[in-house]
Length: 183
Image (cartoon, rainbow, N blue to C red; front, side, top):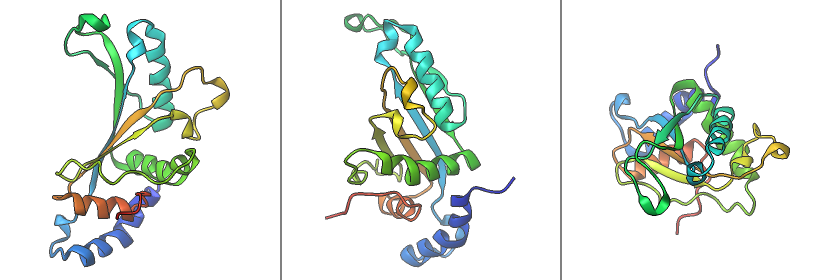
């Protein structure tokens, strides 16, 4: 099996650009994309369990990997939520699947978003990780919009080995992440 297009691009172009930009002396200290975590919280799953199954199916289609259902950590009586109830799902992508998902996200899904101005560049956590929210799952080409009964969003977290947010920003920018113009 051939390696993912973005991984080849990382090895051949991005590593040299990052070395030039930040002056790394050892190639092992270059920032890498370690994993992408997609998380979906489904509040309606409290009343209707089938909603969560539909969301799990959609995320599996989008990522090519079966998500894990997440359960409530504590009970909240106002929301009729009990500890241990399934209320969402998440999937962790690594390796080839991760690079292919990133490629589809940057080149196909984000440009299909209505009134797209770029993704915010303020969502770094201080340790080189970036999280963005996607409001509609239908921007992915794998989803058949005719069969969609309910829209849902998702949080996508990019976990990098970068020490600082600047390094992580540069890494994601070189991968083609369409950040809003920095002031």
